[in-house]
Length: 235
Image 1 (spheres, rainbow, N blue to C red):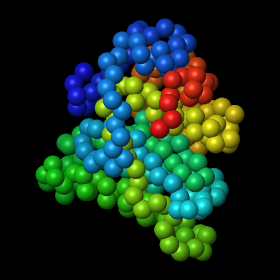
Image 2: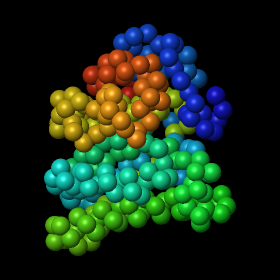
Image 3: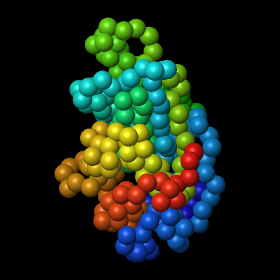
Image 4: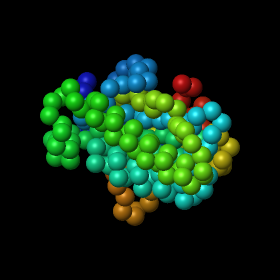
């Protein structure tokens, strides 16, 4: 594996036994590197990131299923042109996305103002700011409120090793269970979990992600277990 873009072409099919815990997936045949601790990584083409943010104070971001639907609609409008999505989870007061920024060629095709490498970071971040602003304006109008809805700066961690990637996928889908909102990841409607184990068409990087867990059967098995049983340490 190369240092950069190492997650784009990794396929793991037969290296791991069926029903292996995430701990086994992580430690068998993988060269591990340290976790990234940068909470404000500069967004760049072909790189993979864990993105997350929460509501200001005690605010709630989603008050109805229509709010969840509208948020994903705006995500598709603003973010899908610049990034591919592995998985996500939306909860009442915060959200998580695991994405891979599109290639430089794809970005230049989508946005004509991508002229140099130096411009990518700011323009990509601006696209996310426009996304959050668009949702906030609609939410404020609906709820007759004013002011910001989200924390000022959304967090993003650049992912450069398989260990971290596997942990993030599990962490994202297990969030509703940890929060007491669901008994199992499959019970929570507002995440990517059901789409990933479904055969229905999706814009998620489903095949690539499932392959990282060996197959769908093992993906589902891993997600039946809480973080402590699958080797995920607190962040």
